[in-house]
Length: 333
Image (cartoon, rainbow, N blue to C red; front, side, top):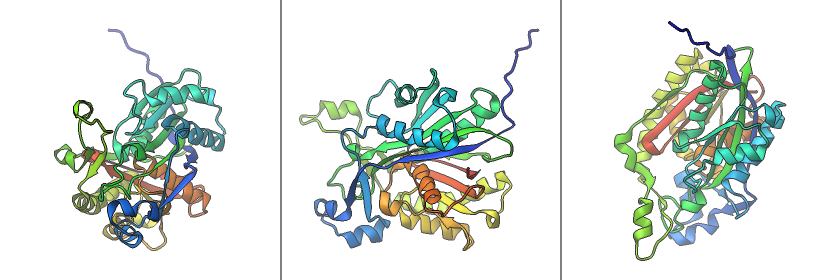
């Protein structure tokens, strides 16, 4: 019997650097509300959002990913040629194939790194971090760039009262690599496909093209149902992630949830009974809901603003279309 040789990876992996790209154009609620017969006060009460960013033609999924990744690599002190794998989490790369990741890997100047996209909507970045952790520890890669990026403005209806004020654009990235101590906890993830229609693309591309007046398919969401699901189900997932990482809630420094809605964040904090000392990410107020990009963007803002520091213990949790979710505890670089 032939015994296969097995690659030995690092005992532990961690996030080594964080980067972000925010489109230049800031869009206040005043530019959104007339088309949905609403008001700035109503939008803030419903979501907490005051402004968001919309990308221009030059700020493509690939361009934003490359910029965020370069910042993360610089922060980590890693040369692009050392990168073995690039993972892009997105639902708004509108070219079915090839993946955005292959183009990002090339633009970064990697030495032919493995590259692929992940379609897990708002939970995609946390899925990517989980996979990168396993790749580094399993020996398949030494350094992995994980990117969450969206141009949701391309697939959002300006007249949909349930979504027009919510979705936005941007990119966040991290470098995952070897660590001398445990720095990425076990992932708690899953899906509830029975409720897939709560957040979805409105129609199949074939149906859109076959219509008498073809239009770009856009996102639709049953907001009240999503709010109830996230507010009451994700608190349990958060505690499972803490338990699997061996971290008590009192040992937590930062809580970085998917920036879906400020009211959902408040409901999660209450259901989890977060201690007062835990800093909570609120990037949604200025950035809107950027789906797969929201967690890394919120992480980068907390570090930049001084709300999070090196060595802090942070809980990442994301949830959205699918209904997919993922959570893990990490030590910040």
